[in-house]
Length: 317
Image (cartoon, helix red, strand yellow):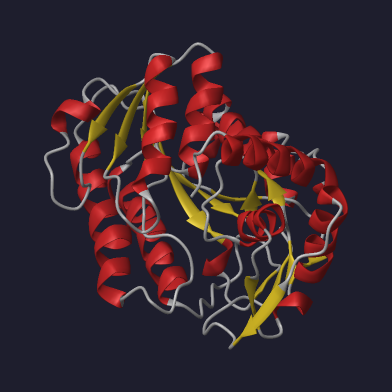
């Protein structure tokens, strides 16, 4: 099957592309290689995927002509966007990269006679400070990120409701693992321990609860949608772990894996951050047969080993 992945050079996009190539699909990627974090890491991912046979277009979804990249696409996995809750990211960046970009992609995709399904990627931040509910509960986002990802999701589903556009949406919960963005919690802890540098921890965040989800378990969710896309169309699915750990417990596990404590520097809390996430995956289990399998300590051990290997190879400065 010919599959287009937006944000293919990013953390989840690259891991999804890897899996789908291994499953025998023809992969076309779109990525703008933005500078939210070091683009060199994205170029490393892109080089790996190109070597495996993926064709990657450097395009900005918000401004560029997408016709060539989308030609004959049967599936579109939309993962590109302005990531994360950040006090340094402007509303305009979230607006452009989450809402405008998604609308342009939908518009460019809507006329494809080959298209079987458009799978949007959303986030647990849509739910707000406490992300523990099922997909039918009214969202209460508390950040620009959550608001704009909800709007992007509804653009796809509105086109489905109004014109039969074959769309569905996945809401991801706290994904971690190899290739994770360097600004995220676990890469920062791992780097700090391996390089003997302190890392910053937002005030009070060690008590926050998270559904930490290993990336390969998240990819299982995408593959489940791919394999049952006719069932998935028109629906929203929470994809994540239904087990909770505090941020402090996650930090302790990394310290145990690497055999050394991390030096922490406490900084003021981040506005709009989530206090608790626990993925309610009853719908995904019932409709898609989705079941996450990876224990947190096992997934973190894989991530730490990957990071250490890349650090030794000079991938991280």
